[in-house]
Image (cartoon, rainbow, N blue to C red; front, top):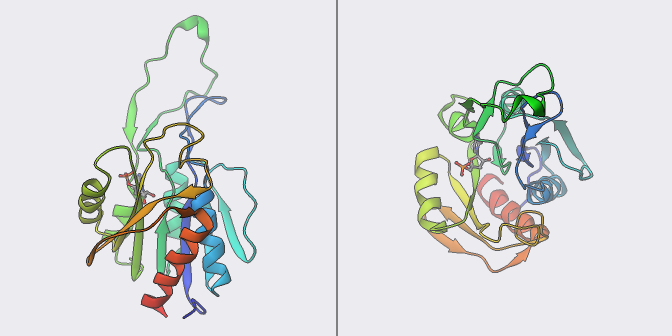
Length: 215
Ligand code: C5P
């Protein structure tokens, strides 16, 4: 089975939400797992659009990359990339943004009183959209109750599969930034535990499963 003739959208990396012209709210996502999936899908013959937050990673061969910074930019880049047969939303999208100050905030003025606004949920929005890809896959990074949260998230977001991983390590040695990953695939058929694998192996396995559905 290959993905020849299919269009696959992948989001990857963190988003950066600006506070002022020099400061951002960010998270620890490295983008490695999403980039590995984009590369594996391209190797399998798909046309791949990779919508990447700010990361220092090379674009995998054969992949069309769109760089974004914020959640709002990622949301509109996904919309612009449609239609697609499959979307795999791996990015760690910031849940909140602030209205950025046009000028650099001054330390002497004291700690800023940041007002948070909710970002759009790209995955839930795509699921509810009339242009929903046939196969919609989300990721769930959890620090506790990984599987029950992932099962609930799959229902709440209306996606077909959730790839759940435990990020409770919380440092650069953990899943975020590391090269290995232990995930569970949550689908309508139940929960499938995968062994610990490299992120490239997780990508390959996931792409094979996608090709079995779409191929
Ligand atoms: O709700 P939570 O952030 O845990 O959900 C994770 C999944 O939802 C990931 O697939 C992520 O890419 C997606 N997501 C999104 N837009 C958001 C937040 C999360 O697409 N604003």
